[in-house]
Image (tube, rainbow over all chains, first blue to last red):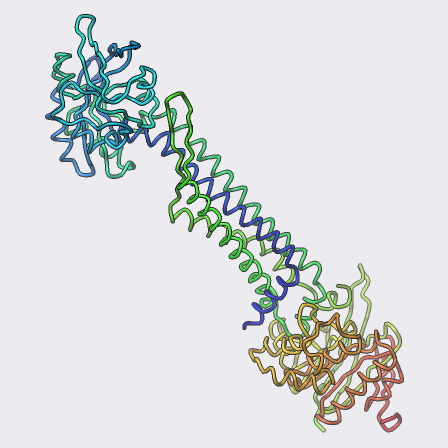
Length: 389
Length: 230
């Protein structure tokens, strides 16, 4: 065994309790950072993810300024579907209307959706909590948001009366209930087949085209291509459309980053203090080691190795605890109900890259934390140490 | 006999504020290979300072120390450390064992630092100093005399050409002190180990081949073995 490693192990074994406390501090730091980032990811997915996955997609085409509808939407859809990076595109018509059950009427929103295209573009088809999703062949059938269903006291198989104008009322059967995680969709919307709604409204246009990409980071680039291909000027990215909530989640992210920074400082200070006190208490021993032939670099390496060993153990424990906590919450999901009828499922997750970066950051911090005490030890004056240490 | 150590015009000045205080003044000495030399003198005479110079724990202000033909004064710290590790063995007044290592581990440490790992040699040395049975004991389980004997074994583990002992018996009772010095005498006689011992106890100094008396940083007198007990 290398003598510097041997002496480092021996020094650690002599101060087990203090070293244990430092390892605990480092473990908590690592666990905190990993969990903060995982939770931030969960918040993003829970609040923003639902918005992107269901409402906005990564890009949305809206009617031109001073127009009510998007003209030639099906022609535009064909062009969009041929753009690289586009996974899917779907037409929608949104309209206001009165929706009535046997017990209650409510003035809310009616969406006409193209079921097969919607399935490729959004996760609406996966959010059916009761009943079935719509089919392209469906006629007067609807999906209703879970909160809205609760409000109207209806269930799958029941009927709703939908009125787009004051004169006409149409009977629709509830084919399914959706719980999307989007507060707006879950509490204020029903979804009917696009062609049925289009015919009832007497329009040839759509009110929005939702586009899903293979990578949300490409949104700006693909937006330019979409504008060019469809000659649309009113194309919005997901960031444009979920600005407020994105900002909120961004603040959470900043808090997570600040927490990370503080945790890293804590690790550095903990290592620095434990090694500083070790050096201070062992001045004579250090003097003896140097007197019997230990070079300055040898003494420095003893404390460097000690810091690295403490860091590795603390990081390992912290990472395992953090991943365990994440795994536990993935199997025991937190369900948040910010508003009646709205459910947001918080499922923390973290990428391997983030774990590696966190572990490396703390490890490097441990090394930085040991530099001053290690240098102090290396520069010990032999005679003063032996006689006065 | 071959000169192992040659000291020429050695001076050491310490700066106390703005005043230069001479700790050693124009020391000229030779120590032959296989000698057992005691350096004695009143407190403040420069005994430990001289030993520190010979052991390269400190750098002279001027002059030269030649050990086994190698001039040491101009060596850099790294070279001095290497030289101490492989050529010089030290014992100190305060035993100076590392408290977190066993007696055996303390003895093996310089050997490990040299890149070797010969446990048997360490055990043989512990046997020579009479500490074989206590090899696995921690220093706080050993008496002062026992600790000093382990320190001697540690000092010899790399087969140094020179053993320097700075007041090794200062914190020991009379019996333990005599045991330690007798051990040094035995090492000198049996394996021809060159030893330089600093002591203020004349009873112990008489066990050396030669006594070098220092006063006020200068060699006052040198007494040879023929005048003292063998």
